[in-house]
Length: 151
Image 1 (cartoon, rainbow, N blue to C red):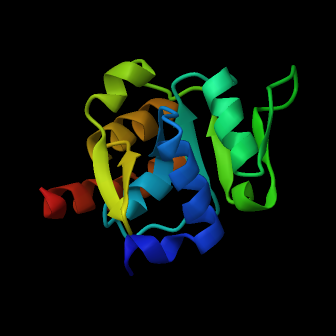
Image 2: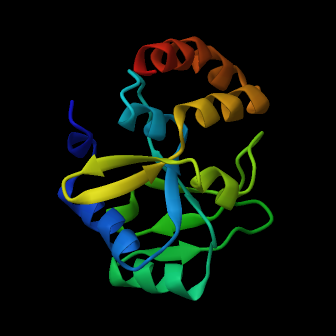
């Protein structure tokens, strides 16, 4: 399956708007792994932003018809709008450095004419190990096998 097949036209337009408006973000989690060729399934696409809620991000989201709901005491940050139904906002990546440190080593996946930044497979593995949740630990053998094949 081509990377472009993972996203609808509306979702691709949403991501392209973020890129065109200069919003610093990357795809993380299993979606990032799948975009790098890992045979994994996920129900959402996790986005990690350098500056959640800043003017540039809010402006780009507005342009895409999406709203940002900041985190509250009991709720994570959210994106609301038809183009963003598939996307979740990541507030923290366990076991990793800062956004800037991780972004410097991000992989670029070409989707149509878009160059989409994604967290590297090595760093996805590090985060899953650090999180230690059963569902994260269960996928580690697949991620490690894929890394051996991809490298």
